[in-house]
Length: 137
Image 1 (tube, rainbow, N blue to C red):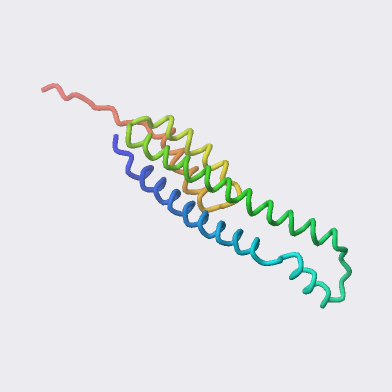
Image 2: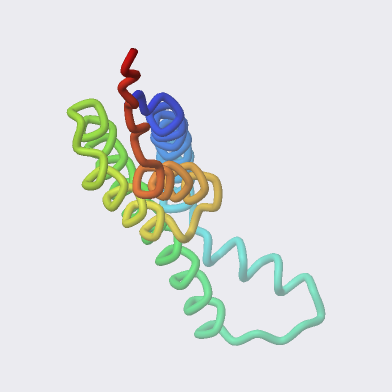
């Protein structure tokens, strides 16, 4: 059975994950190169709100942690998606479907790769090959 839609959706998911990975890495490198804590301190000092230095430091570290968790999940999604594509081409549809669903769950931080991995994963597991019917004349 031809699995064209599963293959195409998986390729789109891997492409989107790769683009998101590149953008997230560039963002993380940029935010590490500037002094983010000092910029947040300056912008909050101009407002009339009172925030302590430890609160600002904790929120900056939390944001950077989320950024690195996104990078790790996108890297896992990229490798899992590529392996699933090769499994699909090799004819191991059940394994590719399970791997695509697991990869979609890992990319919980990013909605578009999640959609483009979960949908073909479900399609791989649900679609059954057509049965051939012999006609006796």
